[in-house]
Image 1 (tube, protein in one colour):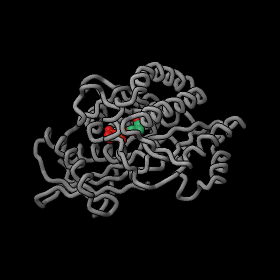
Image 2 (spheres, rainbow, N blue to C red; image 1 turned 90 degrees about the vertical axis):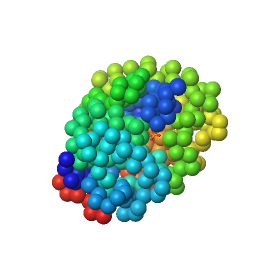
Image 3 (cartoon, protein in one colour; image 1 turned 90 degrees about the horizontal axis):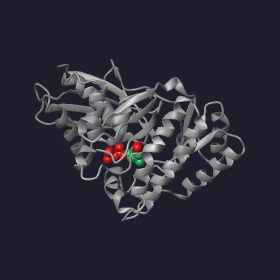
Image 4 (cartoon, rainbow, N blue to C red; image 1 turned 45 degrees about the vertical axis):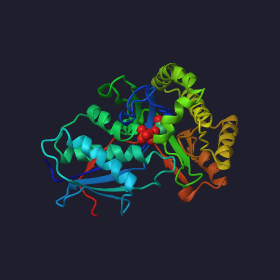
Length: 332
Ligand code: DP6
């Protein structure tokens, strides 16, 4: 058992979304209603140091501050899950740092639970494989299952817990894409995805979307294999709109979009009509991810700047790597 380990992991942006859990499954398992597909995001990351804590309780610091109750409980529940299969069950100290805003529709829970899983696997000496860590990370946050891998990643829904994990389909270098993220709002979202997944099947549209996902994933993977970014972009836009259709028609209704969100959706389609290769997708928040061909990214970025998205309102993320263990540890 090592005393200290530090892992850096990246969030991911889903091009085919996870929204809603497998009917009848225990919510805490985060078994999804469908498979999903994502690009791991470079340039943004969570760095997490896990060490053995000599005092009588787990300690969790996030971005320099003691974690709030809910976040603390979620991290400790994850540590308990991992300690259950370890030879010894020490208290642990978790120090975590994000270089992007939490709770803003960027999947900070994905990079956070991926980094936590990999670092705790080291400290507890569990020796889990990437796939096994994907199963564990999924129970911390569903989308974290995908952040266990870099590049272009498929999460197979599976029917039981051990069968629900992600795999890398292609490495980051497979496609020259840049995800330009417009930070429409940094406000914490009122309804997080955890709660939202539980509402999905109150929407009359959910069953239709679920039925559509398997063929969409097949088409997405075929387009990925032939490097057909245009088809991938079209499928990603449509699935994002289908997911938001489900969200908006749930009871209660979830309306994550702000006026600025809609402005960018129209702009992206206008830019595409001008010949720029760019497509949008949106997670459970108001921010818009504009997926562009790398060659067109500077022109798309200039257009986004003209809409006010520059400086700390814009992120530019190429496909990123899987989690890496670092030699330098965070203090705190
Ligand atoms: C809209 O993984 O955040 O980003 O499993 O409750 O942590 P929990 O949910 P989470 O849900 C992600 C929802 C999404 C779509 C996606 O990333 O696939």
